[in-house]
Structure formats: structure tokens, C-alpha cells
Image (cartoon, rainbow, N blue to C red; front, top):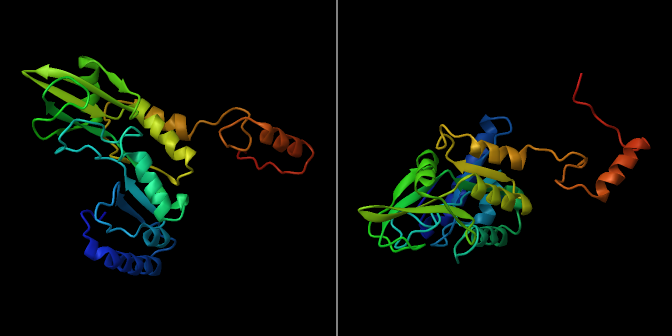
Length: 250
């Protein structure tokens, strides 16, 4: 996890990762090497293409689009609705890695930010630095103050008043489900989270993961999350004995 990388170190980081990969493979059997990489490469410091070839995966830190120091409150991990959002980031990565979807992991947040703002309007101007709210803090606050869903960014937010107005944006099970589906639809290597444990005491985020990544559709024989003619063809071939079934039972 190298952050705030200057442009002057672009080639050196590639060289370092090449040498690190060699060292790992000399000392370990079949190591898995991944890197945390930025949502937006502001300074053209990251050679995504070379790093994707060297590693087994680039973990996109798909959060902090709005951050503690933002001038307006907004979604930490917007899926649509802004110039810089997850859609922009993925397109940037796919372009620069020549479509290496098998090397891209979409990192998503179990946290948000709570800003002091001037009023209760959406994306209100902030008056101070935001405070990070992990899911286990943000969710009960949303239940208490009232929950608002933003269709444009596929994110949850709420506002409240304690002397001053405050506005908090965070990801819940619904917003994360949309983003998991985004990763699935684009055939990415997988998703990651920052960070496990931020949902302590709540089970719904595990439910979102289960629903998107472990449930098998009844009749979906080829496991493509759809029941269609391909499943019928597969079933016919099984019946005719053209395809063997390998049982996982006793």
C-alpha cells in the first residue's frame, strides 16, 4: 500500500514491484501479490498497465471521492452522478490496463464522513473538516435522524441539527449491493472492503455479500446468474451423457 506517490517515482515503483515479485516467487510457493491503488491518479504517477501485469491484482481504493476536507458534503464512494465517481475510475483503469478485468479488485468502504454544514440541503457547503463514521456508528444515527437514499450516486445520507446542521454520507447494505453488482457486471476479479470490523454488531453487510456472491440461482446450471437457453442445452447434454457431473458429496 503505497500512497501519495509522486510522478517522479512512477518508473521506480514498477521496478520495485518487479524485484519484489521475483523475491516473493523465490521464497514462497505461488504467492499472491496485490497492491492498493488510488481511485484517481491525480499526478500521473501510477503505471496501472505495468503494475497489473506484475501483480495478481490491483485493489482500487474506491472511496474518499468526498473526504474530510471537502468543501461540500457528498458520497464517499459514488456510483454515478459525479464527474469523478466509480464509473470514471473503472473506465480509467480499463483503458490504462488494456481491459485487464481479471486483475482489478474494487475496494469499497464500510465508513463515511459526517460534516458540519451550513444547512440541511443535499451536498451542503461544509464549515469544518468531516469526521469519519464507521458503519456501526453511522447506521444507528441514520435510524435515529431519518434515512435518505440518493438515486444518483446510489448512496445513503442523512442530516441532523445539534446547534449547527450536520450531514453524513455512508454506505449501507443497499448501496454496497449496487456496487457489488457493478463489479459483477464488469467481470472484475472481485471486491474488497475497508475495513472488516467496521460493521461490528450489525449483520446486514454480511447479508449483502452473501446475496451477491454466494447464492446460487435454482436451475442456473452454468452459474452465470441467469436461467436461460444455455442452461437447457447443458441439461440436455448431461442427460445424453455428453457431460459428466462431478459430485461433491460422499
